[in-house]
Image (cartoon, rainbow, N blue to C red; front, side, top):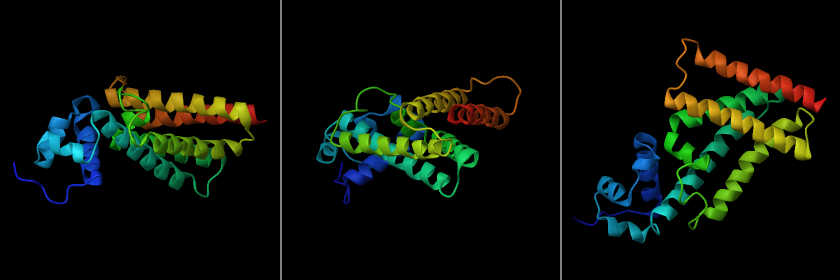
Length: 195
């Protein structure tokens, strides 16, 4: 197989991101990735330190994309408007990038906390939480109460998008309406909690 010119870590990770979003995280292998790039699998070791490193790079990519998405959504908004915008951006990201989303959520095993990008991924994850904490400050929540609220919101959003992706909502009800009610419940609870 001829050497492919211009292959870089960035191009390898980008192709891997496309693959996991199209075929799912469990389907990712170095052999499959190499085939899609038109190179032999050992060539990938010039750019990644193995599958765990690749998954770590994908996790970083997903967290950075999620961060940008929810940051843009939250800008200039407060309270319910910010909460709705961030939740909708989160849901859209999960729907458009299911493979990357699985890694941002800590799914998929090996690589979520390893590889050369682990520290950067941890920092990106902290920035994502920071954006949500900023939204919650609009409700008057700080400290541990705000962190509990972040966990509750993340659990609800992750549960909803995971069930939606799995096709587990079988009742003939509008999913958008259900999602809106989920956010309304959080909004009402946050208003009570924030005083």
